[in-house]
Length: 189
Picture 1: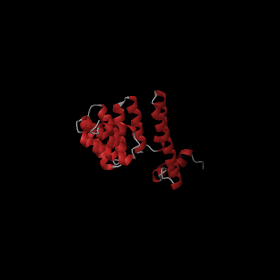
Picture 2: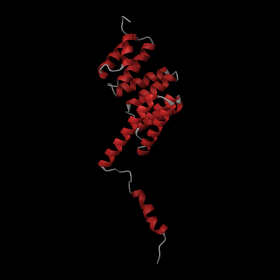
Picture 3: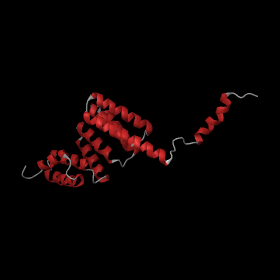
């Protein structure tokens, strides 16, 4: 008696929910992470160039990374950064919030969402997001630098200087923007 292809596949289809095809061996997981990191690095290089074409290249690299892991907060956050650079602040916020939904402890997404909020004029929200980022990662010198800039704009130079000094310790004084901000809070400035 001849069986149809459908009758042979039906048990496989019914049983496919029993198998997790996404379970990776340690080697496969390490390779996937290597690919993800490479795509993230490529996207950063493209974003730093800042043209429409290079932002599109960054987006393409990140979409490939999202194919590898659709819930990786680094990828979602980077997609938000591309949209922020394009001026698509609503879409940027969507990706930053999606990154935080994937990992509420991912401090960089809080920093980027704060930049987005600040750009939209929501200073109090930006300040709160930066506080959360600093609480999650006290060594995040960019969060401290941005928080200090907000404090300086709000007329709190002494508190801004404290934050910048802490940022300088965690960054090893390697950030030029932080150095400029630190000089601006100096009593002799």
